[in-house]
Amino acid sequence: MFPYKRFFLNNGLEVIVHQDHSSKIAVFNLLYKVGSRFEKLGKTGLAHFFEHLMFGSSANVPVFDRELERVGGSCNAFTSPDITNYYMTLPAANIETAFWLESDRMLQVSLSEKTIETQRKVVMEEYKQRYLNQPYGDVWHHLRDLAFEKHTYRWPTIGQTLHDIEGYTREDVLDFYQTHYHPGNAILVVAGDVTLSQIEKLAQKWFGPIPSNPLTRNGILEEPVQTFKKSKSLQAKVPTDALYKAYKMPAKGQPGYLEADLISDILGSGKSSLLEQRLVKNGKIFASVGGYITGSVDPGLLVFSGKMESGVSSTTAENALDEVIEEFLQNEISERELQKIKNQGEAMKTYESIQLLNRAMNLAYFAHLGNPELYWSEFSEKSKIEAPQIKNWATRLLKEDQASVLYYQSTN
Figure 1: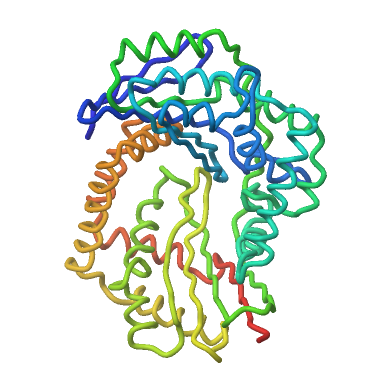
Figure 2: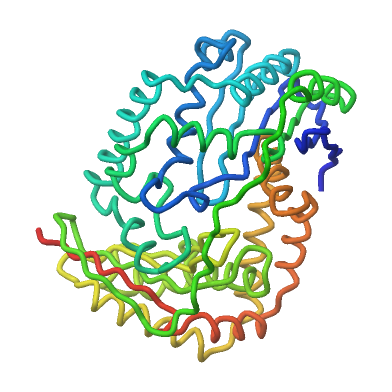
């Protein structure tokens, strides 16, 4: 556990300060509580598109990256279905530059037609290269659309279609900015060689005058309970067949979420996992296989996926996968196996805590979930879960009527 202080500005901005004087570096992490799940059908991909727009110019900053590089800093960002996160690393002595840059684009980022059209071309090219022209690149377009009927997790963060990206108007972009990019919808974490009083003054100076807008949310429809197995077959020029089998699972922070995470770890995480040992090392069906969860704020997916050996069909692979899952459901989980997974989780948590940026990101993310303390309490709860709890949830979750299966079939 590492120390932090938390305060709020009058405009609603949540600020978290984590002091670490072991180096002269600082991290500035600003999380906006908006991702692709807040978009509307026909206007998907706006959250990701706006991430690109934020790296252009603002009223007092001609080129964002250039101004940051002048003071020895670097930056990046990412968009997920639930959040958009911007982060900078720079010498702590220059931390005020980060406040200047980030506050200026929160208040008055440039949204000229030229800027919008330039970034539209960039994002459309990214869409084509990463999702249309890469083998298996469109998997999540199909799998999300198959698994979700009503919820806005139905599309990936890049957007549902190129047509959506082509259709953004300046009014769409401006409305998105005004709705989501303001202090009341953001969490700022500053970590490193800083002090609480210093950050309090800088936060008030640079963000205090920025007004908040009313918090309005698009009505996100609740996903209905799935009552039957769903499947879809795709044919494409890919090296081999691939299989993606997703089961519905609880939302982050809800009962069953941590058990689902452990199920994915035991069955499909790493070279010693059950699926790896049975289907890759000692089998001739899968060339690779794994398990993971989407880890989303609303109910998400527990996914098993893999690429087949040459000539093996994805339907044959599903039968082999189902056999291992059925065996897992019928047999007891050994204490040794469970402890190994928990040890791996502890090692990963320790590794994450070494990097200042990871600490800042985790504080922001769990504050977004409700409280930074959840970062530690979630790990504590997970380490206490016993085998019977895992088996109970595995029986509830790993059902065929909860599955959505994508058969990615090679035409080569």
